[in-house]
View 1 (cartoon, helix red, strand yellow):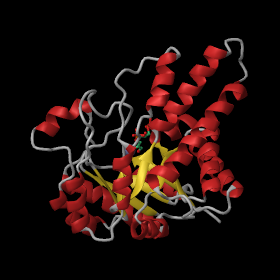
View 2 (cartoon, helix red, strand yellow; view 1 turned 90 degrees about the horizontal axis):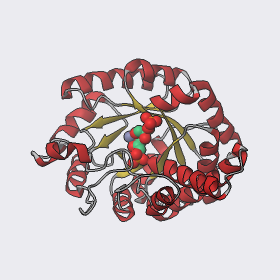
View 3 (cartoon, protein in one colour; view 1 turned 180 degrees about the horizontal axis):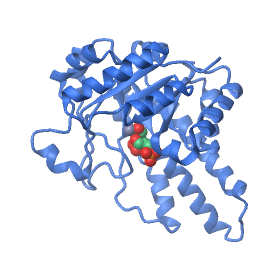
View 4 (cartoon, helix red, strand yellow; view 1 turned 180 degrees about the vertical axis):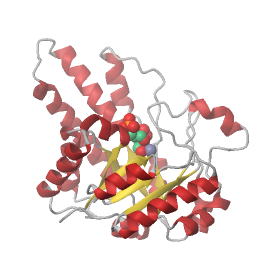
Length: 312
Ligand code: G3H
Ligand code: 13P
Ligand code: ZN
C-alpha cells in the first residue's frame, strides 16, 4: 500500500489501547531495521525525519529510502512524518515533498503565537491531505530541573489543551509529562516517574484525541554497558521505564517517539565489533550486526512496549 496518514492508525490505537512506534530514520540501515521488524511483526509504523536528518542525508534520499521500504513491505501501513518542524517553510517543504504527516513544534513560543503558527501549518497541510502534530509544554530534562521544581512550568498545562486544539485544528498533540530527549533523562539515584495525572487530565479534556509522547527512549542498560565496556563514556545514562510507556499506550497516547535507543544499539554494536576485530575496515561488516541489533530492539518495542504487533 502507498504511504498513509496516521488518522486511521491513531483511531485504532486509541480504541485498542496501544501506541504506534515513531522511529527516527537517518540512513538506509536504520530504515531497513525498523521496517523489517515491523513487517515480521505485522505492525503499523511511523518513520520520522528531523531537520537534522534532512541536513545530514538530504530530503530526497530519505524520501526514496522510505519509498523503497513501502515497496519491500507492502503489507504494513507506513507514515512518513516530519519530526520537530521548526517553522512553516520546513513543514511546507515536507508537505510538498511527499510526507504524509508533519509536526510543527512551536512549543517554545508564547501560547498565542504557538496557536497562530500551528494553525497556519494545519491549513496548508489539510489542503494537501497531510496531518499535523503540534506541541504544548516543553520537555523536561535534568538541566531544566530548577524550572520543573518551581511549579511544574515545563509540564503541559491541561487547562490550555481544549482551546489549543480547537483553535489550531491539529490532528494530534505532543505533551510534556516528564520525558526528555537524549540518553540522560533522569538523575542517577532518583526514581523515574512520568506525570500520569497530567496525561489523565489532558485526556479527560480531549476525549478520543490522540496524544504523543516525545523523548520516550528507555536507554537500555545492555547497550549503555556495551558502549562503556568498549571505549565509550556514558555514565548515568537513564531512560523512561518501559512499563510506564506501556501504561501510557493503554491510555490516550497513540504515538511514542524513539530515537536514542536506536542510536545506542548501533553505537554499542559497532564499538564492540571494532574491539573484537581491530583489523576490519569494510563498513558492511560492522553495519550488518548493528542493523540486526536495531531490528531486534524495534521488535521488542513493538511486542512488549507499544502493543502494536499484529495490528497492521
Ligand atoms: O527529537 C529529536 C530526535 O531525536 C531527532 O534528533 O535532531 O539529532 O536528528 P536529531
Ligand atoms: P528519545 O531521545 O528519547 O529517543 O526521543 C526521540 C524523540 O522524541 C524524537 O522526536
Ligand atoms: Zn522529540
